Amino acid sequence: MNDFFDALKQYAVFRGRTRRRGYWLFHLVYFVLFGLMTVMDNLLGTPFFVYLMAAALTIPSLAVSTRRLHDSGRSGWWQLISLIPFVGFVILIYFFVQPSDNDNAYGLSPLTSS
Image (cartoon, rainbow, N blue to C red; front, side):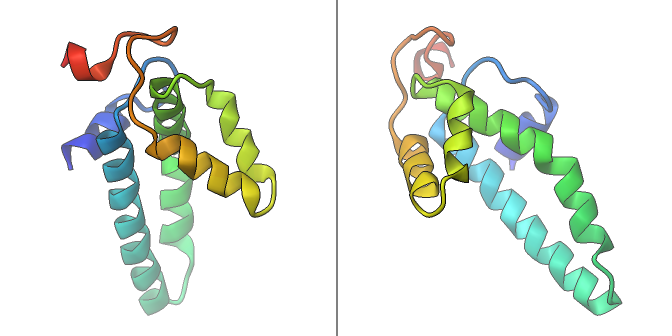
């Protein structure tokens, strides 16, 4: 849960690096909250809470994804590859699961600096 709040504290920080654990735990909490909001919206008969949560967490999601790509030595612009149907999403997931790079152009390795 701390990784989720750490990502929210860096709401729109697109520089630096995020380890795999921080990236995946952020998205795990995101999807659990999305499921809870979906259930709440179904009970109330309105899509309000899902839209509100998606709007509030779009920028932090992009930011944590950019920092994760920086950790593997890639630019955050690689997120645009997900716009290619089918293949783009698979390639992006492959980039996200790769291990952390040593110190690179995007900063010191989070493994050695923490």
